[in-house]
View 1 (cartoon, one colour):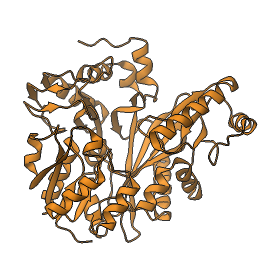
View 2: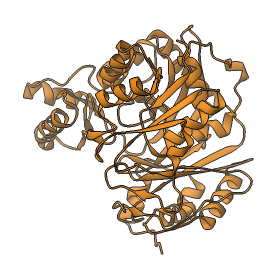
View 3: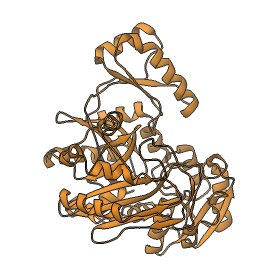
View 4: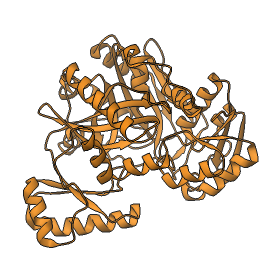
Length: 453
């Protein structure tokens, strides 16, 4: 599994993050780009860069054949998928391995198991990981069976696509009168979006928090969990702010679920970095899905533990044993991450364009992960995330204070960004007192509680 050159099948801030990790480990890096990203300054940080196709994702970052051709042409012997795009595509992972390259991530089999939410929940139940009450298999097409399943769970329920993700393929059903149309609509969306029409039902929780557990697993049967992140501040099922440790949850409860996550990962032969996501309500954890890749919010865990998750990912892919044991892991202080998106603060509408002024904040306890500089073009073809600001402190109050200072210092011109939304959240007494539920932000926006300038 030894390799010397890593091709990064991604773009933007995560591509730059991986380039830096490769340099730290003495590895060469190859950055790919689309025609829309050609000439971006972050590409200069790689040892080599190559344009692989047109501006849209389907013409470039989602084109597995073009990525493999680029790897062959540049002499890369490993591929890091980052997050998004092909990072959780089991077929692509298989193609990488078939080409004699190393895929920096889990096996295709583990990815398929955890990428199908029905199979993932079955695997978690087998390891005594608590799950949201719901159907244990795909929902039947029989109308009477469908109604019986929903009544057994108890309304409200949520219809979910088995292969869903990114906030797609979900509908809340509050009465039997809404059930059939919601199921059929979700099935059709799942067929078109994920090429898998299977759906299932879960109990819809009214006031849950979104808590996730970070894990690392190697090829030698070793696995660790690295604390938790609270990702409850969301908009349209997309995370906006993440932090850790989670407010008000007993450490022994976190520890118990963390140990079960590790046991489950060992049972399915998982390797690499992964995140198990839970809803938490009334003192109960309930598993919803696993992300089989590095997460956008991984800097929160890095700040709390001092462990470089991307470097660990790469070293695991090289066949090395984990450099850390569970007893080595301690969570210290508090960390919070704000996702800076090229979008209008209140409406959430994307704002592509050219950045004419850019100033990143600094100071004690402030980290900025970004690929953006003055003159950077933000294309309209991809996710609007352009930066992550991470603030740490001895406690939550200090982390929040440092984040407020960092956002006040940050300067962006030429495009709209959502800094004002973050500032409004950070001064909202409901958020400051906490903890927030997953419905907190959308409720606040609907009630027009925030004013932004």
